[in-house]
Image (tube, rainbow, N blue to C red; front, side, top):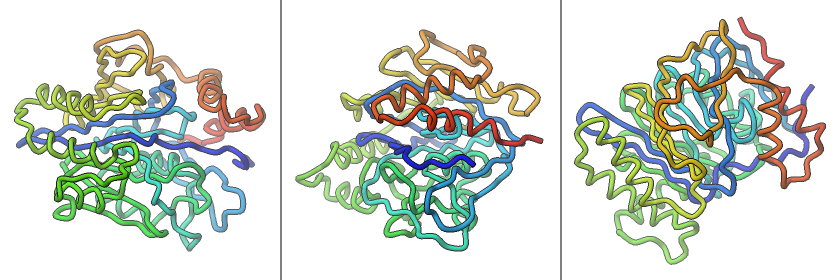
Length: 343
């Protein structure tokens, strides 16, 4: 049995920004990933597999198990099955930002997933809509012992429904509809960010300029005059540039109506596109990967190569090189996805 006893998962950085930008019939999701490292693998995850939670030491309750209903493409720094975020074949986008106020629920009747990154993969594996994401809280919980920075998420589905989901004082808090007048999220609670936006004034102490970024992104998305999808994508990248920091590693724009992912990285600032609808998500073909920093440009959909343990292990080594974690544990983390059963 694989047990994470000392792996300290660090989660999304302190200056991340996400937003949803819309016009009458199109929508895009913008995401800045700010962190000390930009290495990662783009991962094509398959449907039809039975997965289980990573074990949390001393966590009470049952580990979650589930069958993957939807294939997905994800950005993975800490290994396969542990994404920073991504989009599935139903057009659901899930992305996370750090939130120091986050507190996950204490053990109860629900089975748990081992950490917040695996929870994001669970959502992409099993949900097609924002409503299903919200309902998933009745089925699983994030481990109370989940390590790393706390997080909250912004989610968007193909129908245009949007939600901010937070875990405060051990309880889920969801903002949708009229409670979500601005579809932006940074690194403070949504309530505090919205209050400062209405005052048009960030607090005196604004860690990582979180509220300042929230206000700027909110104003830019509200003032957008983009009419076509191409204009929306361009404006989304402009907005991401306006709220970037010296730690911004990736800028990602999801066009979930047309099933496209556009991204650029600090190492390779050329914009690349991935056509998610062209992937075979069945188990008949192997999981595929692509280095996010590969020296490519334009459409890179056909540049993915078959997944290997060696590539996953190498990425994990890069991610954890400064943590002093024994190789034996990193080997186990890299092998964990190979224990899953597929139909």
